[in-house]
Image (tube, rainbow over all chains, first blue to last red; front, side):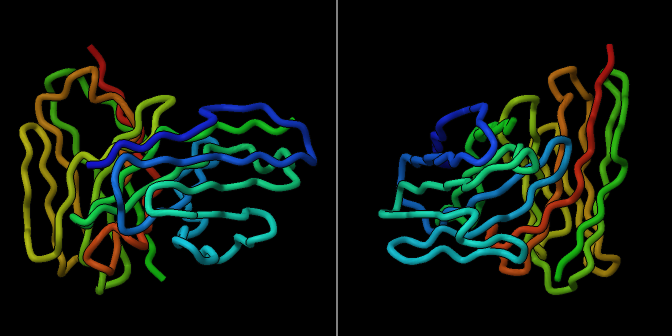
Length: 113
Length: 113
């Protein structure tokens, strides 16, 4: 398994501002992903964080709204830009290990007023 | 793309009884099927997974069965305990690993005393 640290764990933000979420894993992993979980809903993949290059976004998600960085094998950030109340969700960092399994962090609970 | 359906959406059982959650998938190429448990305020936790070359897998009180012909897989929890109360998500991937997972809609399991 992998130990994943995400921060902040929760935040309340004003409309129109941006928030950056950090994800640190305790070991080198093959892939890092960012998921969104809207209240009471399932998990939706936002993008794959690629080390040293632009992230790969899923349909419905764009770089201008969710810029992602991954400067090395164990760290990634997700920014939620120009936030609106519809962005209120749990944002989850996840890592894909060499054994082919996916592990999640505890999530960052974002409320936009 | 892949579509995963999960039933039931809520399930209430008495302590000591068994619980069964079922998922169906649409893409016959899918070959990796993990199950996650999400407790309130926490990130999803991988509890068991199965690959398409195996029909059943057990881990103590938890088992997963896979029927490739019918394209469905199930989670079985025996001798349920109050700490089993959580939301459970199934998922499917065609890569043989946890990359590109498609999640089901979740089942809220309540174990009553």
